[in-house]
Picture 1 (cartoon, rainbow, N blue to C red):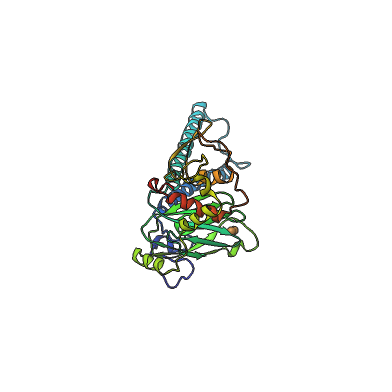
Picture 2 (cartoon, helix red, strand yellow; picture 1 turned 90 degrees about the horizontal axis):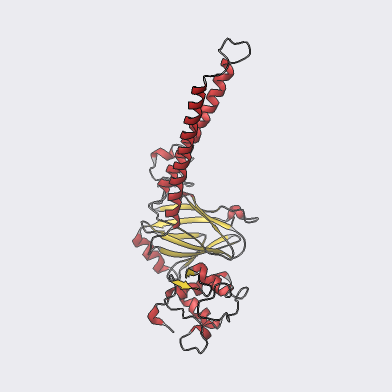
Length: 328
Ligand code: CUA
C-alpha cells in the first residue's frame, strides 16, 4: 500500500494511480466493470469528437461567402452513409448491451458456498454480522480470495452499499432483502460508502472494508466476542413467537414442515411453483395468505409489524440451517 495516500489505497496500479481519478481495483469483478466503462467512454468519446469535428470543419468550410461547393450530394452516397452509420451504431449499441447484460447476470449470481455476511443499514450506520455471530459496525472484515455474499436489509429508509474499489453497489431497502457478492483480490483498507441520500448524516454513513489474508481473517473472527450465532438467535425467536407451535412435527396443527425447505421449489395452492429463498420465507411470514402452499389452509396469522427486519434475518438463518433430517 502507498503510505503517502491515506485516502485511496493504491496497490502499485501504475496505470490508474497517475491521477487519483480511479479508485483501486480490488475485486475479481472490478476489471470487467472497468472494461465496460472504458469501452463506453471510448465509443462516446469517438462519436463526440466526430460530431464536434464535423461541426467545426463544416462551419469553416461553408461559412458565408466561402467558395466551397454546395448543393445536394449524389443520392447513392447519402444512402450509403446513412445505412453505414445506422449499422455501425446499432452494432455498437447491441454489443454494449450484450456485454453489460452478461456481466450483470454474473454479478447477480453468487457462487455456491460464498461466505455469507448479513448487513443491516440504519440511519446512519452499517451493521454487519458474520456467520459465527461476530458483529461489527461501519467496518467489514473479509478474507482475500474468497467470494463474499452480503444479504442486506434496512431498518428505516433506502440506503445503498457501495465499495468503489470493488466496483459494486447495491440498494438496501426496508422490508426487503437485497444481495450483492464479490471476491476481494487485494489486502488493505477500502472505503465503504452509502450511495443513496438517506437523511442528514448520509455523507457520514460509511466506514471501511478491511480485506485480510485468509488466516488473519480466521484469527480476527475467532477473536471477536461471539454473540449467539444468527441461526441460534433465530431458533429462540422461532419458539418465542410461537412458530414452533404449528410448524413442529409433533404439532397437531396441519402446517408445512420447514426442515430442508430452504432453496427447494414449493408447489403453491394456485398452481405456481416458487423457490423457497429469503424473499419467499420473508413474504410467507409477513403475508402468509399470499403464497399458500398446496394442500394447506391459509390459517397462519401475519407477523407484519410484529417481527422486525433484524429478527426476520435471524429466523430465516435458522430455517436455512435446518437439515431435512432435523425435522422437529
Ligand atoms: Cu444511508 Cu445514505
